[in-house]
Image (cartoon, rainbow, N blue to C red; front, side, top):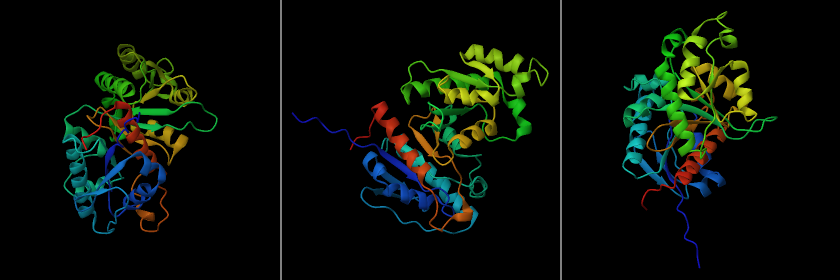
Length: 312
């Protein structure tokens, strides 16, 4: 008796800012054997058109001004999301965009995360996941941000009880549904050095973060200089960071070039590389596609784990 084959996930892949390395890493990833075996790709390119790709890679034109590049990148994101919401693809993988170009192109969003939340009407959380343990460690590192792209001076007012509770809820559900972790162990990273050291370096950790952590069922808050190492050694399945750079620095030092950006809370999986547009090396053929490859593989893996496929 022949076992029915499971269809490969179909993923929409945006090529990002056409002036950067997005087109190059998308083409390199599409040609990778692991990617070809894992998923069927639908490229969403600079002109806002969709090209279904199975056994070939697409060719995209580089160049143009920032406003045009941002406009095309924004339209591609809109189109990819529409494909997912219409059920024509199982998930979305996005190549890097330039935030200032996106704004110049008419899209007033700080980044992909905020734009995806608006397009879907969902509460989301930004996670960076390094699924391959770093040397000397045993576990994946997953970092979720309670606040995303804001100035450092705005962080203390933005790290609120509601922000922590929302990040905790979305993170817990995402780890359960997308990563198959039935009882996630989630830690909260402190805001101040040494978690405030009992008020010596600020009272936010004792008066705000600790009560919020208890309410949300999180461990901590723990100092930033130890909590990520503890997670990599198996103590936690994810760490919620209070602001962008403390979380992103930890994961990029641990696994730059192979980590994956995951938007938790969407009605479909969305992943992205852990780096930017790299305008300075675009067009030279030297861009490393490792993180794009990992992004596609993780998105396909989430689709398979969820057991949902679009109708062929």
